[in-house]
Image (cartoon, rainbow, N blue to C red; front, side):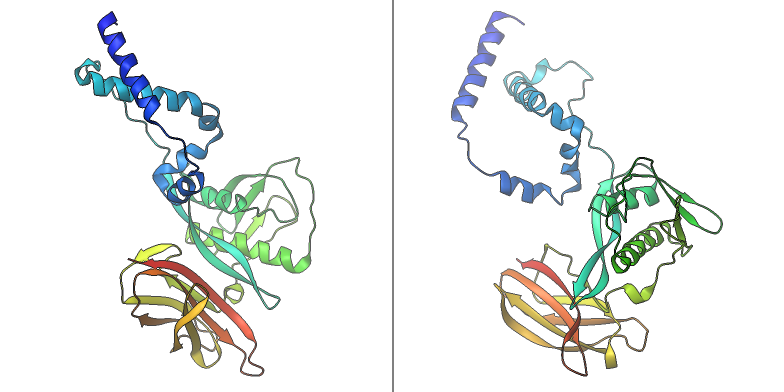
Length: 296
């Protein structure tokens, strides 16, 4: 590098550095990147270890390209390839008046080329480890069973029968959705299985759209599936904790899950859609689901 170019680069870098005013926007940055698949690569430990060097290098490279766009070697590629990402469905536990229900949630995870394993690893990342802290090593799809293999060295945790049964169903439903197969699921230890995905453990009321944290236009159409007494589904739309609209609609009943929907006109803002069912005997809440969304 000649002295003239070196001096020019130093001047550009010094001017850029003096113009930076640090602010506390960590929360905003996390909010913008949390659900963006293209931004998930930064969470990996290897990248975190070299994060400072990467940031410093990006500033220098950016300055060089601004100062001398034609100085890049022919055929060079300055793009950074993100790790392949995959959207999978996992099943999370929720509790309504002491009753445990499963709720499907879509999450983004690293794509290793093994969708079943990727889905189970995404489930494990939520803290799911029934009775053990051993890590999931493999998911093997056989002719009769799907076997989830745990590694050695995990210690036993607290095993409450009801919770353990629900966690086993979390695994069964996650595997069923990833493999599109209803084969029973078992583990390489006597702890799990064989267990088959049971529709009775799904929340009787599930909102499918809009997705949580989605941005939509008004009128807003809320859709989902349900299996409730006399097909009745109650709904509310709340803003800042206050009900702005509510009503009733119909879905499935008598053990047959069916679709429900309702539409509301809403001004711009952030809202929560709530769909729920109550007991015909005493009016207590028996099932509910919520989704928060923004109207543009």
